[in-house]
Length: 250
Image 1 (cartoon, rainbow, N blue to C red):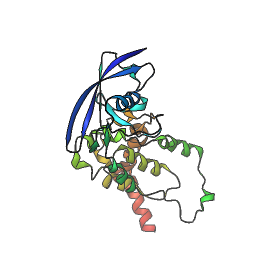
Image 2: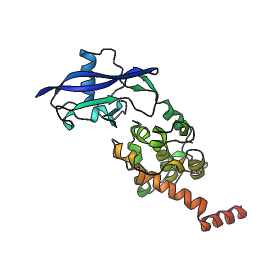
Image 3: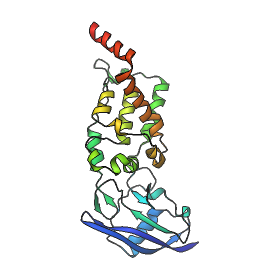
Image 4: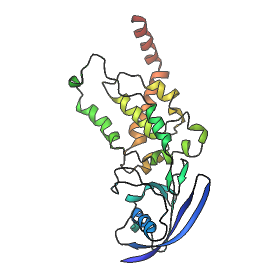
């Protein structure tokens, strides 16, 4: 079964642009990315769009569909009514390069700012040992495909450009939480999370969790536990006293 679908697609570049109206054939079982490809093939050959796997695993085709950050390859056309106009726009939190392609280099800069895994200096790689429960705690976070939908929907980044310098965003705060949970990691990441990566700016609205295509519970399993450990380390009087005693003994 086919029908003519109505679409509004953002066309433009860093200097500006606007939504353009198109009528494109929609076939049963298709996703939004199929429509964008057909639009390129039939009406707008110069339409810029980033994509790779078309299987929901590379994170390349992130866009905003009817105002919600989604993967175009995982958004089925069957979720929309036949007469509904489907609007496709670039990720709002990042600068537009052209059409649906945005400059997401902000995220790679934040990734480089997170110190790598730091095992004990005297422990050889073959001697690493972990309990299965510790493996399971961080296994969920390894499913991240770096689509940056969580970064896009986070209002701290999305609505406040001046926060970007001091705020890593949910994807990289989750990475810090993952490393902090690792029993072999020797770095103290809690103070850096608070003072260098902006953990305190996160107000746990769970919007990042809601848009994650891998269904990672970013807020509940990463950000809230990390906040709790930061508070314990900084404000719990018993923890504070214990750190002073250990420091004196050293």
